[in-house]
Image (cartoon, rainbow, N blue to C red; front, side, top):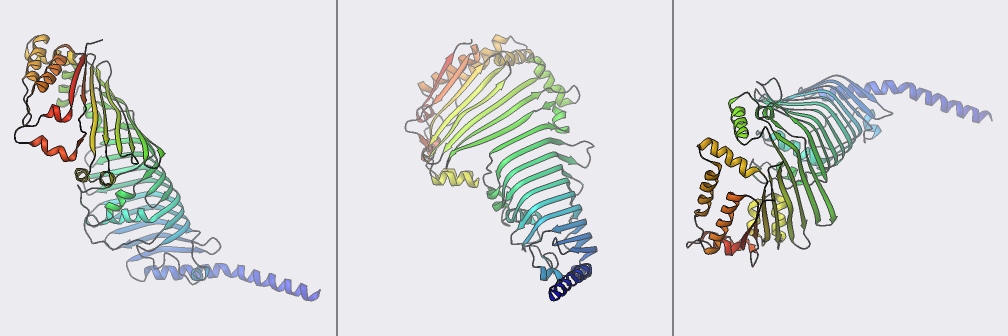
Length: 494
């Protein structure tokens, strides 16, 4: 019994001594980390604190000087996936850590971050909080070119996975030209370029000379965002603006709250833009895109605004209200791609509808689509099966010709007749003027004269593929109507 009491007492004493020694060990580890950081002479830190139990390291007033200068008021890492023995010796994933090396932490927090490039561009962040951070190893060797920051940024995003991130007060300025800023950014379930959810608030484009933002978006919400193809392209040092960047995949996106000097200058307002993609099966998807609440109401100030307002007034309009709704589908298993219906609608003015069907979309076509290489489509077998364009006039033609008549000093009927005559006599270069072409132009001219609903159908037989494109530029002139199977019909006004 006495031996047991002695043993328990000894354990308690040793545990007490160990606990009492923890602050000493933590201070020693912190001193070692600070010394290692400042050893190369390019970095400095005001103070370092280490927490053994939560495997944490906190840096206060951290500075790095190299190709640019970085300052962080406070940097906290906790839940480090790092051996306790290494932490006790003062070695952490940060001490001696270099760009390109992996890092793992349950929680990361930055406050008051500022980075200045030698050329003068500045990046700042008020606060950043990350949970479940896992930064994989990546290639950090990038030549010192103007694209160095963007290349490294793309590689880092491809290498990162995290559960959740919150950022407040992000800003970027490029010398005296201006820049952009974000009030907040939230990301959930990021995995190597694929975002589960992304929310941006208060995005602004700014110029150094303007007191108000040039352009602003209040909120952007996106789910199922896949930027991997784009990031892969931007990660390459050989990539240059204008080169393909790859296709961006999303499940749902909504952008709302548009404003700014650029829109106010022309009197433009816009409620929202939405895009929804539904996947019915592997390789089968349907996409819906909408633009709601577009209004053009030119201001009374400024030459451009006055000119547009006078044009609208001549048409009997105070403003122009438009809506856009477009749906499409793709089935890679069957090799078909369709524009189900794209409609541009002007309130009480008219409507333009477009639909089309493409077939024989092979692997070369989908590769070109996914990579963003438009020229790759010309090496595929994709072919136009059919298309339809519907122009439904309500009052637009009459308003347009009223404005033309006012400007030219003629009657509305004379203005319509003059334009209709030009349509009938139109002879496009390189196109054979056949009886079918003449009939087509006559139908279009009657639409100009009387209004109604003009429907133009394309039904090429066989389907019009990439291999038939040279026929459009044949020396004798292409029979465009026959090649594309074009027909036109006109329905009278309602």
